[in-house]
Image (cartoon, rainbow, N blue to C red; front, side, top):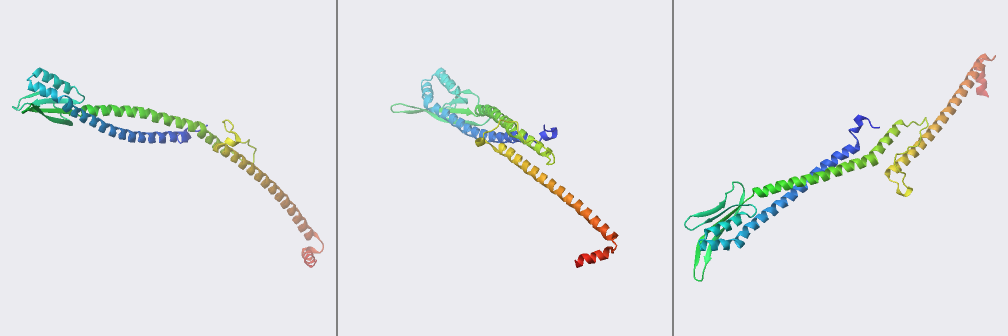
Length: 274
């Protein structure tokens, strides 16, 4: 069982934090790239709608002005205003009078201006100018909502992956490494200790992973250490017996030399001459 202070430094926790931080960075980068391309797509669509006014509504406005049909002109201008992101539509007559719908926006805008010209067989008449202004506020709002959707979706994915990785590593690796560390801390060659066995299904010999190889290596090392310790103990015992025997022999020789009639020096001379 890991101690409370050790749990703060477990690999699973660190993996979770690193995976979460990395996932957040990837989410920010991918979301930024997505929003960048989405912004240009939205701007392109807005510009396309502005161009659409000149191809689908300009003729109707021209006919309404030529026929002096103010009611039809108001209907057509309202249709233009109802297009996405359109904020202000106006028709300025040659005399300076103006018919408009909507309000001129204060923020970033895109605009188109079209000449209203009526061509007959032998005559071209200038009927005024059509001004169409599109507001970027709606575009920005859609991008803002899209960004939150992306962050929420990617955040759920990143968090799920980080939790899964941390849980999987904790179950398949970290807890076994902790058991191995505790086993190694308790190991002592002078006493018997059962072989290390991890709480996991046994793998076939041809499908053993790194943990299986580590357990086998620790078992082999334990056997070698125990054998070395036994050999060292036996060698120390033999050395001790030899030392005790040599000590007894020395004292007996010393006593014999001191108590013999011819004396110690005579024994030494005899020993050297012999």
